Structure formats: structure tokens, C-alpha cells
Amino acid sequence: MDEQALIQDALNGNLDAFNGLVLHYQDMAYNVAYRVMGEHGAAGDACQEAFISAYQKLHQYRGGSFKSWLLRIVTNACYDELRRRQRRPVTPLMPELDDGETLEDPYWIEDDQASPEEQMEQAALEKPSSIASANWKKNSAPSSSSWMLKVWIMRRPPKLPIPLSAR
Image (cartoon, rainbow, N blue to C red; front, side, top):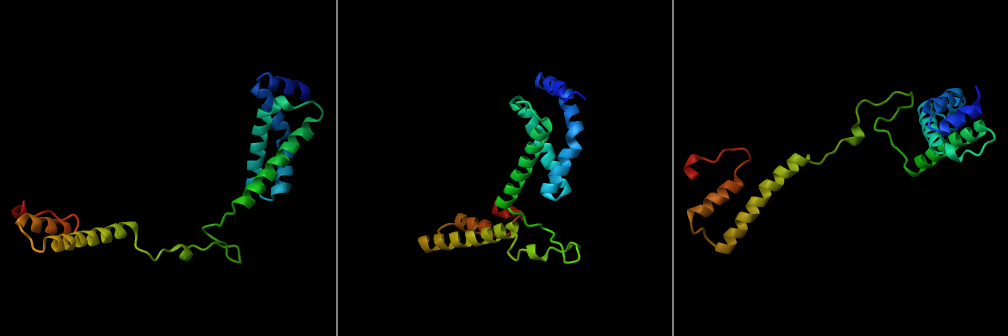
């Protein structure tokens, strides 16, 4: 493999040339990433980010050891990911027990409050009664049957049809 020729071809836009460099260095890059990250998935992600970054910055390669240049990019991608993890720590939804098993019942996530639907129903039931009582105090007595119809419509349970006699 003529490394310098592949680099020059990749600089000229030949993606196959860069893929040849990736195939040659991918195992070495993964090993470095795994040593820094300590996890297989994170090491694979860091390698992928590093190769994308290397492709985008290939024009900044000034000669010398391509291997050193590439592995420095891999190492920096790993450090970036570790810094990102420190800034945004993650708590798993399914924590592991001491024996490595995960809990199947997420009891710590349970919400004792009413569901959003129940809260809306409760608000709908409370609001019309307060409006009706405010209108009652304002007018002191109902003056027409239309006011009584409005109060009945506001107080009826949701999804019940309005009787034909009231229409």
C-alpha cells in the first residue's frame, strides 16, 4: 500500500482511496479508542467520529506520519466524548442490581399524580361550577331559561349528548 498516493488521491476527491486508508488503520484506531474509552460501543462511535473528522480535515495533513496524525484525531475524539459525558451525566432507566441483573419493575419512576387526561377532566368539572356560581352572584337569580341551559351544558359530564328537548 502506497500511503502517500492514497492520501493524495483522497485529497483529489477519491473516496475509495480514503476508504483504503480506513481499512488499513481501523483496527489500530479501534484499539486506541477502546483503551481510552473502556467500552466497545463508545470506542466504535469515537472511531467513526475520528474517521469523519480526518476525512473533513485531510487538507490540513502536513505530511509526516499519517498514522500518528490519525491516531491523535482518534484520541482527541475519545477525550471529547469523555468530556461530554462529564458535562451531561446519564442515569439509566433500568439500573443494574449488585449481581448485574436489571430491574424489570421501574417502581422509582411511578407517578402518584393524576394523569394529564384526569387533570383536564378535573379542571373541566371545576371550571363550569365556578363560572355558574359567579354568574349566580352577579345576576342574583336566573332571569331566563337560556341561562339554566348554559349551566346544565357546562356541568354535564363529557361525551354525553345534549337532550333534544333542551335544543
